[in-house]
Image (tube, rainbow, N blue to C red):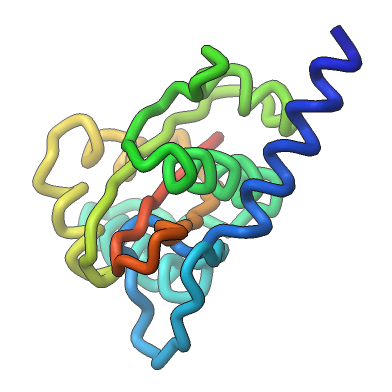
Length: 165
């Protein structure tokens, strides 16, 4: 089992290292696209999350490296698979990623895919009741947001937002 886990860890690392941003969360800055690139998107995301939550009378969320790592893993997986899913092809879901990244307590995940900018991404999540509920849960205090681009050179990004108490 540990050989298999080690193999999957190396495979995940190599797959993520060769990817770019996946979901359509575009920042307000010019970025040179390199197909297969991955990125953690915390500064623009913090502004969006703060605005969304304060409009609902909630406190902001702080960016968290463990949550960013879990989000980047999922974004990378989706980009490499070319599909949006909370579960990897190995049958590992959100609960496994949370456990593996030593995230304790209540947690949730929003995912998306497309060629949209960050404002549009958050607007779409806010228009979806389950995604909105996750972002406005008053128990959550931390978040991690990441994206990975398709390695095929398209502008499609796969996004993952992980929230936790």
